[in-house]
Length: 294
Image (cartoon, rainbow, N blue to C red):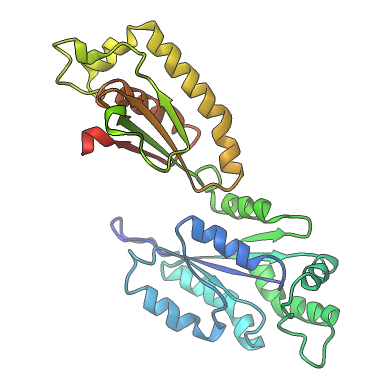
């Protein structure tokens, strides 16, 4: 594969295909949750033109996921594996995710929805359409980078498997840590609020008043107080115990707010310390110090 220049942005194209009723739409939504630009049911004949268009703006279309199904014609589907290999040679990082399920599971899913299988028509029963689709998509299945069998998989499990294929399951949830001042009110739309106004206040130490919880003088002073360590340990233990459950429940964001009187010392210090700890388990951490940034 041709190696891109060190400052050249490498674009990523993920084709999502597989049997109708196997969960392609769910897989695309999972990819969209990870920031992919997603397009469903793109005709295979439009692949070349589409790639040319996204190539004009690599920053906007850094990772694109396309859903393709058996409604494309036979020659177009058969040509996709070679076309993907050719694009890889030009520097576009192409991968193929194939979803499948056993015939019994697919029949049951179509019986529970008003959707018709795209290959039924007047000539094929549902089982016949499923078998025809398997043959049409066999070249793509052989080329697949990942194959996921969804026969016994629910929506949440499928999302986690897709994230795992991309290496993003661990970082699928954003944890927002926010410090604030109670005198200005509690932030809106938070999931957990911790009140740390009972902790020793650096504001009343004249040489520390003009600093913030991000400064070493303040952090060292707070760390010298045993009660601060106890408070930190309790908050840390709570978050490490419960954040994984939120992540497994497909939450995109969890916001944790920590408040003190002025929002500049104790809460800022604890948010900064927690962020350093949580990054080892939850890679996507966003810090917001409301009173320092206002």
